[in-house]
Image 1 (cartoon, rainbow, N blue to C red):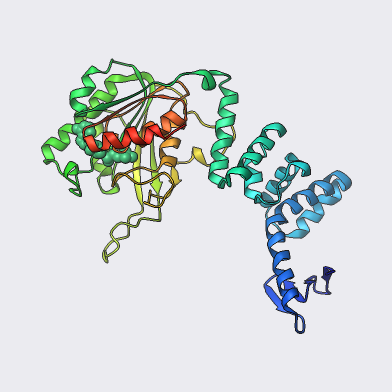
Image 2: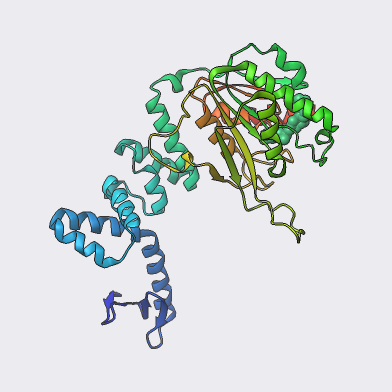
Length: 378
Ligand SMILES: C[S@@+](CC[C@H](N)C(=O)[O-])C[C@H]1O[C@@H](n2cnc3c(N)ncnc32)[C@H](O)[C@@H]1O
């Protein structure tokens, strides 16, 4: 059996290798079996080290109080790393931890009650869930707890309307909508639907925003998505037309689709702005825990054809992005409206998050895509 030894320099020796902070060295001439065993040890240690650290800290604090604080300083580690490790280890009893799930999964469930932790970890194991999926699950559970039974029992109504939004919007009642997301054509001419005469384009944007302001409830939220190079025009246009300024300018940042790869005289574009207008004083539906969702830069990959959610539209927005907007911009049971629905991502997010929704899209092909995508949600 291999034994871990610690030499005079505080380096580890295990299974024919010396493991020092800067790397690994053979001791003499290790066998293939020793090499294999050492690899297994490294793999196990790398996944376990944060929980070891957390248990070590909690044990030290419990047993030696003050003395422990000095020992922590001596480790030279960052306070936040230690605090996080101790928090996660302290919240999740050894009996509930899973050796086939990484620390990050445990960290996501740490703030839940033990019974809920077990449920989510069981599910994560069975579904091979990513850390993002675990985070989403935890958020949903917290919101369900916060909203009592409302989220569980409310019945969702969804409406898909085929046609030009300027013809269909007059049918929507004044002050009846809680959240509007507008992702208009960009007018950059990539596709037939995206090349419109400039006057008509300005008219489309002007009338869309005017309708939005008419049908939004006095306390509600409006999000308008635009390409980076046109966002300042849009902001000024809306300010001049309606005298409103954005409450936030969200930056959707992505690195997996770099625009203008051949450009030599400019920087490559990896973001799109989303103007957010809070109407009245409805609070955003933030999680009680202080986390990244409160900040205005959101890093989310653009949808690729090999993604699980599928790619159906050239400017399809990622489901993660739309879930974030719908979840934070509204409450369960609220009514969400998208004037330029495209592949219907807003509706999918709304349905998953228990919001009523209305989707308007003028292209029949995309209407079929929306129906098909929505029918696959359970
Ligand atoms: C930028 S895309 C929306 C993409 C969508 N957010 C998604 O995730 O798939 C704009 C969409 O608006 C549609 N459209 C353009 N003009 C419209 C109009 N006047 N009324 C309704 N839909 C329109 C286009 O067919 C296109 O699918």
